[in-house]
Length: 99
Length: 448
Ligand SMILES: [Zn+2]
Image 1 (cartoon, rainbow over the protein chains, first blue to last red):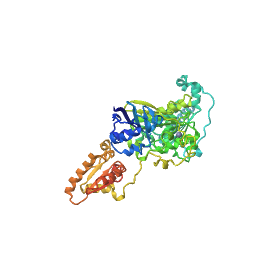
Image 2: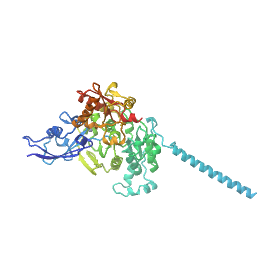
Image 3: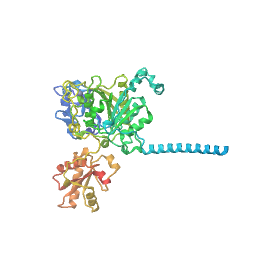
Image 4: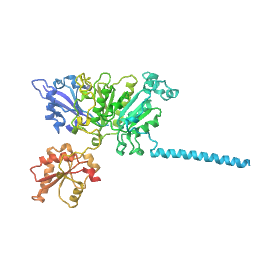
């Protein structure tokens, strides 16, 4: 059974995804539970349109991107270790600096 | 005789009236010329020290603030708290303008505004306290002049200084609360660390394009900027308002919220955004509040064993300048670049070449070079379609210019992106007989 989740990109992160802010996706079935650790490279390989280095650094997101799991900072949810649940909403926010 | 005396009296009166009128006109003229503007503080020695007003409210103040005094959450106590409070706004731009004017209107005791820029015409669409007549005037002075007109009883301090590691603590220590209304990453880290070291809450706002963000740091045990962002973002991922654009009302909304949070904190209501972040999306019309991590025990500045105990070099830390002014990239060698004059000659001589404009389509609508170009936005240079387009043009030109290299000229707004793109094209097109260059200074240099 695949896992349906929603991805959202904002603060400019959507520019790496053809300016599309919301992506409803189905993660393919796999033996072990899907963790954010596996989700990040999946995003990079399947929906990222350009310049992967502006999205990921090493095995995590690049500095300056906040990750939210259902409106909560991923730091409170186990970061890369978080097990994705059906209908989760994962948001990637690039921090703004302008004023 | 009496008639003459009356006549003299009458004439004297006229003279007196006229000289009063002349004084009045002189004053107006001075005001128009800007000589009556508030005096900028250019060095810290000359900065005034606030005498905290602990006395109660005057009758005039009660009349003036009556509509907010009526609120039980504020009341006379709250108003007195505001009157004895001091707020520093860092940056006199799009976030500062609304926050400064509302804090002034609300009757804050002292308002410091620090900025090292002068008002420019491209500021006016969002920095709504500045006036056409103030172009070229120090931004902090211009913002203070506008607030002064609204409420002259506030003690204003316009600092015309660059805030840096040498002066930040000394200035911030004199204030109860700081508003981060800056436009660059380096100053944001500087302000964060200074507020931690001085123990002041930091109400931080930011805006770009159609989006805004708001958080209160270092308040009631909540996290700081570094708890959230221990590492600065790579400089190439940071977009400022002069590159990315911003709709004026967006920082306007965030700036208003910064003033609101400041007032709530100063009057003891507490803030709604400690350990929380507001995300405002103007296109969706959505306000979303997200829950952030708490203070991080391992944070290098607010943690249990801080390694940062005094201010550092923030431009070095971030690899970026503390300004959103245009930066100049030096990636290509001079021989890989073409100055506008030379390009103009090339056009006049009718030399066939491939021109690639790497700006966004909306920018091409504003202005273009007088030669047909391929529009390949900088974020599309790696795309297969883009490369095929260039290859196609190069091939048709090389049929006309056998054995000669085909010039591929890349242009952007200021000559930074064009260097990045030219470098990529040099690699991607290496099997073709091409000579890839970029135009120094881009369309901006061409226009001049
Ligand atoms: Zn911290």
